[in-house]
Length: 432
Image 1 (cartoon, rainbow, N blue to C red):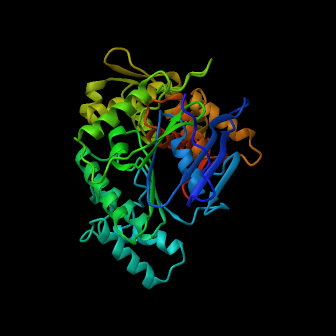
Image 2 (spheres, helix red, strand yellow):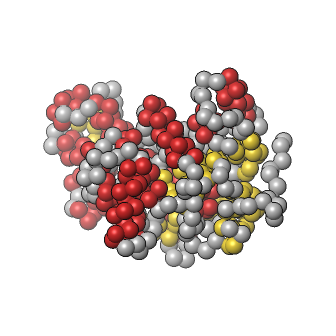
Image 3 (tube, rainbow, N blue to C red):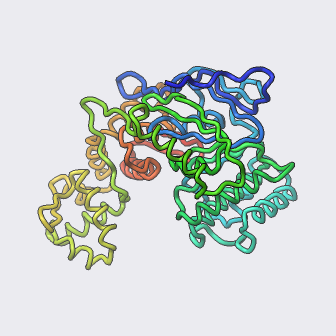
């Protein structure tokens, strides 16, 4: 087994650094869930570092600890050789899910992060204009997110990050939500901006599942093991820039990484927990599920699924997600082509609004993910958990699922039944 990288020596300039960092999350009444163990990693000037590994290995958690968004359980986090306290002042962050305010225009979305830094109105306007031009959004300043393609939404996220003039750019799977051609274009543009002389960011740290993307972009590739996340090895990528996706040298390194990740040394799936089955959550909103129950109740409690699609005008695949979600919650059964309301479903849809929440909570707590989070909340002195705890629980136990989408469904269902509260600003889950 290759050794983990040694700590940097004192004569090597380092922007930020993790030293022997562990991260644990409380988990119900059992032992804490250890997500990271003994992580030592340094970020140097003028490099692109990529974190690559199986689902549940803690890649996003490492990024968040470096950013100061999450504190380690043990170990040190340093920024320019000094202990990091609070948010890392030298970073801009680009998220996977765009994280835009839907009620704000492109300009307003960028200006929001600048005003939060307390800049003057003139400086906010200047920086915003420059950042929007940098990412190719001139002419779309007054557009709302709903009017933009996925690639353009991610450009807004990039503009917000670049507007801060960050020393380092952190990117958490930034191109996974856009089509392949758009992703290829965005990667090249990020590298062009990074490669410009005398301009921030000087370094980039990125999380990715895409091996070819990592080889195309990174100077150093950090390979991680899972359960708990550990640094397995660090590969130096000496390919000259600009790189060609089709070059034999690039494809050879892609094959090498692929063999490492899919081989026995680095399984792509966390070990299942004994005696506990986590159910995938279909991507359906609580209001959609209630709408299905109300439709069925008005038709004697059952209906043919194709008739439901015809009556409601819903796309069939979308309807099936709602039906599957209702069935997971034991609110309907699906014999052959029929969707039939169950007794719990009938009680829920006919109950008064305040009782509906109680009945909905009862159904949620039959699902393992909700059980684990609720028990963990109950155990905490302040009845508070970070968003990361749920994300890592999903990634470890449902490695094939989209953990961000699953988290959104989890929050939607939990809020509907007032099982917990979630604050987007602090990313904290609390008991109501």
